[in-house]
Amino acid sequence: MHHPDRTLGVVDLSNIIKAYDVRGVVPDEFDEEIAQRIGAAFGAFVDAGEVLVGHDCRVSSPAIRDALIEGITSQGVDVRLIGEIPTDMLYYASGALSLPGVVITASHNPAQYNGLKFCQPQAAPIGADTGLQEIRRMAEEGLDPVDRPGQVTLGDVVAGYVDHVVAATGAEGISGLTVAADGGNGMAGVVLPRVFDRIGADLIGLYLEPDGTFPNHPADPLRPENLVDLIALVHEKEPDLGVAFDGDADRAFFIDDEGVPLPGSTTTAIIADWFLANQPGSAIVYNLICSRAVAETVEAAGGLPVRTKVGHSYIKQVMAESDAVFGGEHSGHYYFKANYRADSGIMAMLVLLRVLSDAGVPLSELRTRYEPYAQSGEINFEVADKALADAAVERVFTEYPIDRLDGLTVDLGDRWFNLRPSNTEPVLRLNVEGPDAGAVADLVAQVTAIIKEEP
Image 1 (tube, one colour):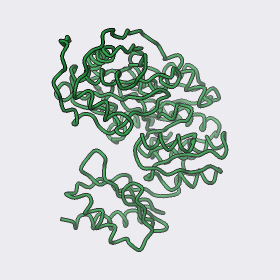
Image 2 (cartoon, helix red, strand yellow):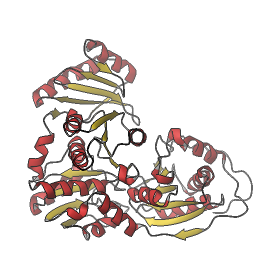
Image 3 (cartoon, rainbow, N blue to C red):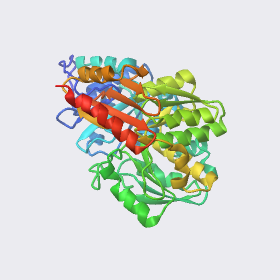
Image 4 (tube, one colour):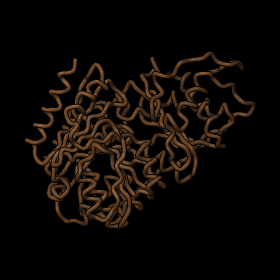
């Protein structure tokens, strides 16, 4: 792809450059020319001699990678190409080598999408307010190449990554367990066998072969239909734990020994408890739609619970400010101070295995200590006017304590709800928690009725 030495035409990239990353359909929204432009902008922005580049297994990733590297090196910046990797391996390498980096992935999106996630050295996030808008502006205007292009070298960080995740989670202490793991034909399969070679647990693999067409099911374990095969495998093989990874393996969803999924809040509380046993008095970050049980678990263990808005850039920032050892989101993102505050599905899995190994009871029994309440799960409402619907709900509940950290949170004593606008879709998201299923259903019905009354 040769560009004559002239300033490129201006393009508009507002539709693919989002709050935290770049994402779009290939080639309609995101193609090689755009990848080259964004690469040049990233190279000019980071002010580093060398950057890391990795990619997932999507069919479009090699071509996007080559164009992106052409852009980065056009600004005189060297590239260390670390190959086909899960996203958390980019964060590890960025921390261990103190280099900025980019991974080509569209995470859990369908096969026709691709995208980019960026970070500064030490895996510091690059989002809308930390440079992504500046990268967008430079990419839209286009940058001329400098006289001496950067060089590309190959680097392998897998062995270092495996050492890192095992050491950071005490995983050498795991013994006598079996795990069923669904890689969703994404990037988890690149490292899982290597990790299990190092620990006292057996791996029953499902869809571990990376395949960018995602032939078995979409690599989005948030959707229950994508857990069906794993749950069937758990019933058949009776492992101690089931785990499903998303496409780029930074998120993980867990299934207990009876085939019942764990809410993200339960996983967050269990992992937080383990960290507090090992590092007493630490801060633990959790987002505001997590169960109340998370903060109660942290307090009972002598830790400091820190409540945040939803979204990984906030979590990482608050973890840095509070020096938190661990952070969890209800959506299956788990963040580790030991991983440069970045998320890792594999590290979350290893901590759960360590807990099960030490506890000597099945997960189906262990989890009950962390699940005193009933939860609605996330309920989405398509509304014409999000602000109007929010105000209507608030009017009904004015006598109760209300907070505005992220949307509307109302505390009704033994039950509570949060209603917040989606950052990505024209919907309001409702989460309700209460003492039992009946109380939750009543409150869901009450809030739903108010929202539906709005024109």
